[in-house]
Length: 210
Image (cartoon, rainbow, N blue to C red; front, side):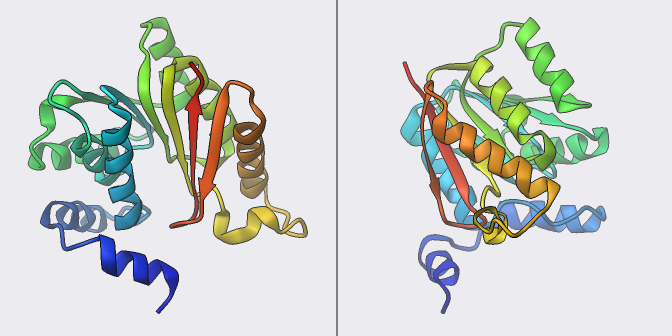
């Protein structure tokens, strides 16, 4: 049994709500690139541990990670989710509604960088930010996340190991290079204290210093 399978067998269980989300993604011809169940559980735990009230999600897809994030919120918490495609955001919202959280999420559609600029104009600030979108913009998303974060906020990024390619200097790939830049900024920025956990395809966690 592989390490990932061992973790999955111990810490995840059948979840009808999330299975429905995955089914809807397949039924709509979307790529099945939602976070794996163990990452979903980690997101829920991190939100609970952090005590976050305002969450920003960059990349909604079909709502799988959105459901996991909202599950960690207290009764007063809210999720703001950014999604490039209107039909993806609509499906995500439908799935979040079915999970019982439809009134606790707001979607912004279009280019995420434009939506982030809009959030800045609206003076929005967040306690927890989850990045799981186009890898080319990970460094930009990190820059914006730091701007929009409250002191003590967590910034979490998925897929930061790229199947181990980030640590293979002989591997040349544009997306991997952008993730390397993201990881290096996360590690070196004096405003952050950070780490990468080697579960799933790697999840980065940074805390904005107070």
